[in-house]
Every structure is written in C-alpha cells, then in structure tokens.
Amino acid sequence: MSEPTDFDDIPGTTVFTTQRSRQGFHLNQFCMSLMKPENRERFRQDEQLYLDEWPLSDAQKQAVLDRDYNAAIAEGGNIYFLAKIFATDGKSFVDAAANMTGMTPEEYRAMMIAGGRSPEGNRSIKEGR
Image (cartoon, rainbow, N blue to C red; front, side):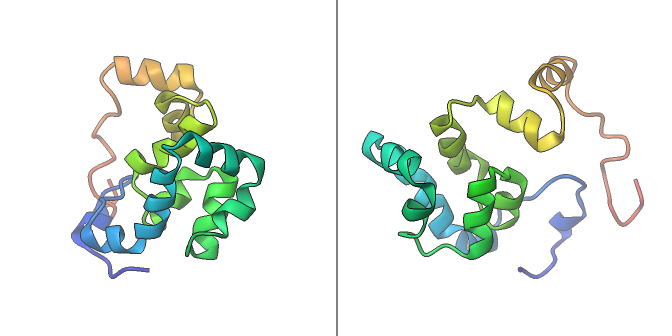
C-alpha cells in the first residue's frame, strides 16, 4: 500500500492521487476496456478469464468479482473508471454509490436531495470527529 498522506485523515474519503493512479493503472485500463461492446460481452461470458488477461493484483481482481467498489478504490481504482463495471451490470451511479455507503438507492437519493452528508463528524479521523 502507499505511504500515508494528509488526505488519509478524511473519514470515508479516498483521494485519487498520482500514487493511487499508478497503483490502479491496469485496473482502470481494464474498466475502460468495457466501453467496447465486444469486451463487455467477453467479460459477461467469463469474468475471471477476462480479468486474467490483465496484469491486476489478486486483490484488484477480487474487488471486481465481488463488485466491492470500496475495495477497488482502495486498490487504486477511480470511481469514474469503475463506473464502466456497474454500467456493464446495468446499474446506475446511484445504485453503486448507495451500495458503497450501505444505503438503499432510495435512502441515498433522499440524502443527496437533502444536501448530502453532514460534515459534522466527518472532518478528521485524528481528531476523532
């Protein structure tokens, strides 16, 4: 994993830095390959086989297979690239974000319409807030 940064102190947030970009390069390239219909079909036919064509870590592959987007982000995935996976699955961005936050899509949508998460308690891990 990467060296800790000041960004790591933001609860529930993973900042996509150049270090994370390098870590997730092949994962994000895999995601971009899903823009082509023929690649989406190959992935749907045999996910493991298609993933094995990419130089991904075991943790990256498992995150994709599990559709664990939080784990994929921790492995260097960028949510805008990962969106290609949930779009391939016929899921919306709201569906994926709700899943990542442990909410139903309806709960997530209502939270966002109401202004999003409160910053209270979400400013600093070190300060216990």
